[in-house]
Image (tube, rainbow, N blue to C red; front, side, top):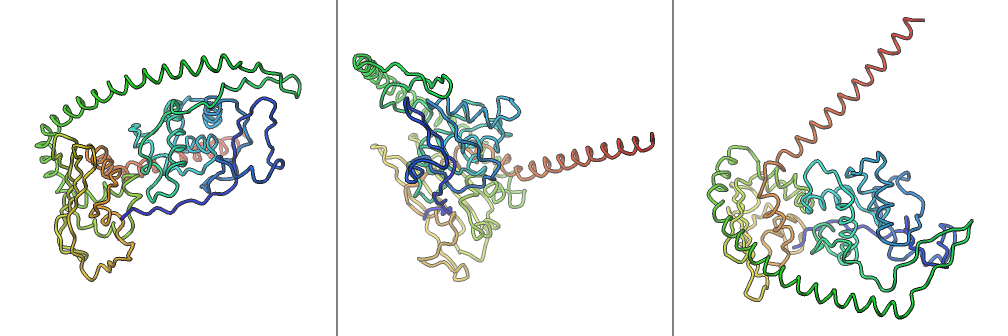
Amino acid sequence: MKAKISSQELSPGLRMETVQEDDEPLGRDGGDEHESDDEFGQFDSDLSDDDVGETVEVDDPMELLWTSFSQADKESRGLLSVAQTRLGVVNALGIGVTTGEITAALVGFKVPHPFNVSFDVFADLVAFFRKGDEDNQDDGLPRAVAANSMPALKGIVMTGPPSPKRQRTGDKPAEANESTKEELEQIQKVIESVQKVEEELDQVNEEQAKEILAIETKYNAKKRPTYVKRNKLLVDIPKFWKQALVNHPLIGNCMDEDDEKVLEFLETFDVQFVDDNGGYKLEMTFKENPFFTTTTLWKQFKFTDDDELDVKASEISWKDEAGVTEESEKFNFIQWFISTESEHEIADIIKDDLWKNPVMFYMMDEDEEEEEEEEEEEGEGEENEDGDEEVEGEDKE
């Protein structure tokens, strides 16, 4: 069963325009009404009216990215906060993106917390959300989870020569030199030659991946005793794994209230690497609870010799009190955990992200609360300083 996240409906809004020579950009009040339903239509989001800027004219993707990044970087730091990043992505793509989705994607990109987004990371985020929006609009998982890859700008395919920069003399665009047929044929030959070189690189990358997998397998076995030792210590923290799972920005998004009630009884969580081909097993152990009689739930992922994913999972014996039926949509996360569908994105996040440093996610809420308290104290201090200055001014009078 898929984790179900409510999808956002397409609605008209912010739109970026690519200006070709001899074309005038359509204004918000002009042009064919149907042309506003193009691929840059905006999804509903949590943008305020102040967030939506004017239409920006650009001639190439890189200029569009840099313009969006610069407009979002109001302090000119060269780095964006999560909120600024969201605004930049919305301006670049014209789709609604929440701060939660931005945070989830940054976690997937392994950007360290607190997040400071550089232009390179911003470019990858834009490409990622564009790809996810094209391929996964109907997927139940969040866009940051549903996409199978995180494409960078190098994935952009040109269908013709680059558009000349738009130059203006007064209000009229200057004429641009058109590429000749011979030039286009020469460019195509170079591209075909480069593609052959890329195929050679792909072969080397495959060899690299095999060697990396062998090294990871070796050290996973070496780290196993340390993981066991860590789990024994974490048992002494009440509801540790429940809190770590819920706090994770991606995993937590796949849970409902019923899942959180079940996780109140979660005692231990374990990840075991089961073979030399990247296979692994997730395992949860529960105390006696009012939802099911099964004490251990597990889910295993293995790859066959043909690189096909083989998924197996434990069965569960629900109690009547849980109210679970075939039509029921309760317990999103638990239902995913016991399913054998070949959806491994959440499992990979657990293995590669949560399992490596669960304490960081357990402490995440506490860290945010401390930051909020510090901001409140700073705000109160500034107010007191302003009040003292006013009193001093009155005394002088």
